[in-house]
Image (cartoon, rainbow, N blue to C red; front, side, top):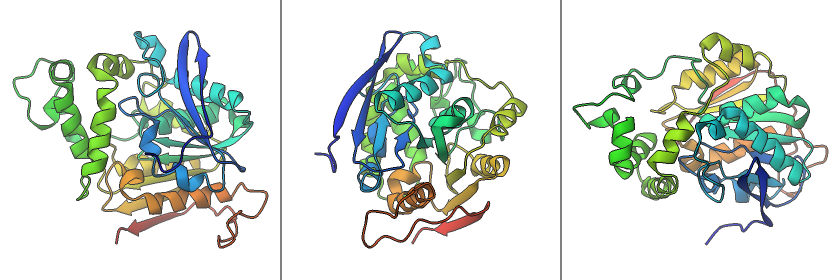
Amino acid sequence: MRALNPDVEAFIERDGVKIGYEVFGAGDPPVVFVPIDAIVQSRAYKAQVPYLARRSRVITIDPRGNGRSDRPQTTGAYADMEFVADTIAVMDAAGIDRAVLVGMCTSSWRAVLTAVHHPDRVLGVVAIASWLPYLTPPFPYRLQYGFDEVLDTEEGWAKCNRHYWLRDWRGYAEFFFGELLPEPHSTKVHEDCVGWAMDIGAETMLLHDDGAIVSSSREETEAVLAQVRCPVLAIHGREDRCQPPSRGERLAELTGGDLLLLEGAGHLAHAREPVIVNHAIRDFVDRFRTRPPADPGAAPAASAPGRRTWTRPLN
């Protein structure tokens, strides 16, 4: 059972690859969830969609490799600009001229690229737990073991390894999402994520991760971020074990955006702290409304502030 069923379930097709998307609710400005990392599917946003769809048309897109989308079997099909093109094609099919884009981890980068290459289509970007290539150093434990090496251990992050993936994909998914969910009582989210990971499998995930990336250095990533002209909100958990909070901080700094740091939150803050994250997205979206919010008891739309950083403890 879903908290909110989609008003539209449809596909677009590009170069023989079908991409599934869903549309919920009504109202402007629209909110588009850019295709997420293919280890999960767009249902990963199930805690956001019902809330945001009260006041906006919300579009979710299953990434190539998972959910209702096809699983192409070439690395070229998973280049980051393919996800950008999928986003624009879905917006076209749904009749959306401009939208607020929401990205999470790798799809934060895809949202940024969409804003740079299609600035007339993007009102603003919300980036949660951002993966931004080479922008800041990764956690040292993510570099401890070579991804392509044949290792003599399967402990900890040694599971993030090509050979281990092919040998025990579920074992990797169980470990990985355990790291992404340091908060207590995360059993349901963990179970969901592992289940979605099983929908892609190791072989297709390897193709996804080998897809071409626009940037090959910190300087090139910074140059991309310097081209962003729309407002940006970066949201990052202080206890994120996947993407260092410094990436969210640097994203806000380079784009002149706002930064929300969540004390005690891990990588999947949108799933474990949905009230805080949903309110932050709502307030950001409200900047672009031309009419008062539909909810009688809702606060008026906030005017766009200057760059600010604030930290929210979890109570």
